[in-house]
Every structure is written in structure tokens, then in C-alpha cells.
Length: 333
Ligand code: HEC
Ligand SMILES: [Cu+2]
Image (cartoon, rainbow, N blue to C red; front, side):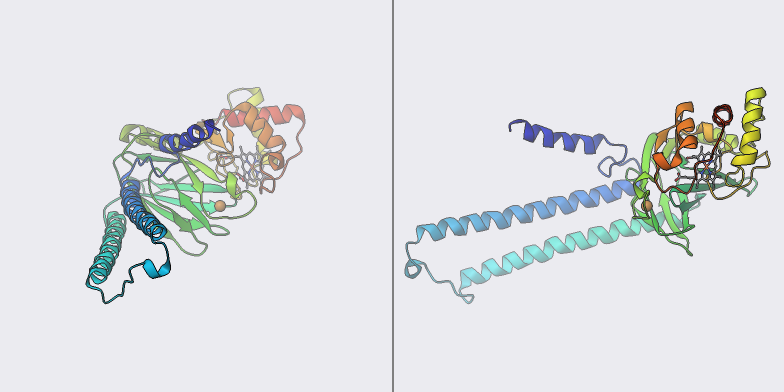
């Protein structure tokens, strides 16, 4: 039994260290939300302790009074009672006013960033993955990728959220609050990350069977790294460098191109994620498997076993074709 408190304390530690935690803010918006949460917790905690101590005191007093007749009767008109009531009501009104003003100010600060010049990114929710599009400020063209959001540190990024099917919700707890992706409209959320590193985002609105496997990686990096990454994403896919990769590309063109884009080849299907630089990603299937040849082979052979209900069907492939197509995808850096 002694281990239970220690075990519970562990949960607290896990929450603080997490790269998917509101308690570990790494951006302006998350920081203001965390301070609001802190303030609300302090105020509610103090009020809770006050109420409990008054309850304790009155229970203790009541026990001392031997019978009902012995207890002093207190009328609301009693001056002492009146003062207590006024003080108590004042306290409650004061505490609630502080909370209202604080949440109003936080809300204003979240909306404020929207008016400034920002990098523009489009995020479209799909069952059960994320389409990401970056607007190249130089050329005005849109650069597409999926499931891995890169953002420069210290700059405001304006994220436009849309949905291709049902309601999803965009949530990277370390960086900002939640915002829904609603079919037929564009919602906007601004994020200003302040710390570099990897974070994790997750769909936060139940959107069907694989909702829990609709995550994404977030990389906050310095401006130079971000520019290099964006330039890499903008390029077309590298041509297959040997016979096995060429076989893989051939299989891909026949079996997979109807649903996946690989820029620079004929593959132009839009039903699934853009795979032009899939090998530059950290994970596949929306954060479900780490990126590796084994992960690719498992996913391609049995997507329905990895994510039951996923909109990618199992495609029947000869073993040598399956191996070649996995190697081909692995070459798409
Ligand atoms: C009917 C359309 C369809 C076909 C055909 C199809 N896919 Fe997919 N694919 C999808 C969808 C939809 C997803 C997103 C699934 C998810 O994450 O829930 C996906 C996801 C993937 C991913 C993960 C990408 C990422 O960034 O997470 C890979 C890799 C992939 N497919 C490879 C293939 C290969 C290789 C083939 C051919 C053997 C193929 N797909 C055929 C629709 C398709
Ligand atoms: Cu969801």
C-alpha cells in the first residue's frame, strides 16, 4: 500500500516532462493558457480549503453543544452574522471577477497574434491523418506534406484548419490550445513556439474508429533548419538509383499511385498522404509506427491490422514487389 502514493506522484512527473503536456509550455499561447490554469487552480484550491475548514469548525462546534437548545441561535440579522455573510460574498465575487478578467485577457492575447504578419500553413483533417500545405512566401506556391509539422522557433505561424470529412480537432498541448477542424469552413489558430525540439500533436475530437491513431509530430527548429527543410520538401522525388528501387517505383505506379502523390513521378492520387518525402518523416500512419523499413513493410502488407478501419486497403503484392516498394519509399528522403 505504501507504494501507491509514490506511484501516483509519478503521474505528476510524467505530466510535467511530457512532450504532449499543457503543463510544459513551449510557446506563447500555451504559456498564457498554462498561467490561466495555474491561477484558476490556486483560487479554487484556496476557496476549497476555506470551505472545508469552515465546515470542520462548525462540525467541531456542533459536537461540543450538548443539545439543540444549548446552541446559540444565529439570525441573519445578527450583526456578526451579517458581517461574515458580506465578507464571504465579497470574497466569492472578488475571486470570480479575477478569474473572469484573467480569462478575458488570455483570450484577447490569443486573438491578438492573428493581426500580425505570419507564416501561413494549411492543415486539413482526414480520417485519420493530416494533410499539411505550406505557402512558399517567395513564389506563392503551396508545398504539400503530411503528418509532420515543421515550424520555425520564435515566429508566429498562422494555421488554417479545414476538414475533408468530419470534425477533427488540432491540438499540440505544448504549443497552443485546441481548435476544431470543421467541414465547409476554415478556422484559424496562431502558434508562436519558443523552444526548439520535437512535440506531439493529437486529434482531440472523436472522428471515428481510428481517432486515437490520428497523431502528428511537430518539429520546432531554428530558421535556417526550417528553410532547409522547406526547400527539401519543395523538390520533386529523387529518381530510383538502382534496379530494385526502379522495380519498387514501377510497383508503386501500378498499385499505389491512384491514392498517393509522389511529385516528379506520375503518381497523383489525392486519397492518401503525399509520399514525395515520406522517408524524411519520423513516423508513418499519423504517428502510429516509427519510420523504418520494417514499419513500412508491416503497414503496406496489413494496414488493417495496424489501424483497423483505415481507408488504406491491403494491396496484394508478391514478396519481392512488397520488399522493392518498401525500399523505394525508404529512398524518398
Ligand atoms: C485506396 C487508396 C490507397 C491505396 C491504393 C494505397 N494507399 Fe497508402 N494510404 C492511403 C490512406 C488513406 C492513408 C492514410 C491512412 C491512415 O493513416 O489512416 C495511406 C497511408 C500510407 C502511408 C503512410 C504515410 C504517412 O505519412 O503516414 C504509406 C507509407 C502508404 N500509404 C503507402 C502505400 C503503398 C506503398 C501503397 C501501394 C502498395 C498504398 N499506400 C496504396 C490510401 C491508399
Ligand atoms: Cu479525431
